[in-house]
Image 1: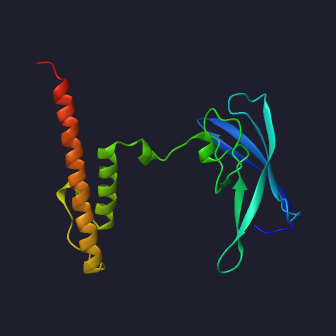
Image 2: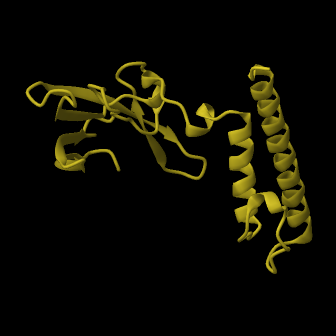
Image 3: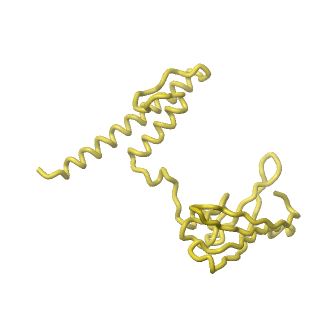
Length: 176
């Protein structure tokens, strides 16, 4: 994107057999107040329309050029992307809707398992992540392999400890 543009487009999202058209106007003709105008129906009611502007801003990049940001209409914070979750009325930032990452909803055991699975795949493992580190891939340096293999062992230990804690809690609640 660059300054001096004004363009309009309509994007149609399809989900669960229904369509959600979104009319977008991008206006960067005024260098000091570029904006994006959005026009769409509410997710909860097709009869009610939402039309609002989202400010755009730029930051200079170290090797030239600029990076474009949205300014969240609700919080006023800079955002890389805006979202419209189910039940939402306007496109806002993740922070404005209080949305978290999937890993934030995981317990200790789930986070350890996810990290172990990622490391096992990075090491070229085709088996189960609890089997330990797979053989060193041909292309990987020994220092990298050993670092990742020791991390995998640490995540396996964390998973085992969290699993054991959960089992102790479960058994302590069992009737005697």
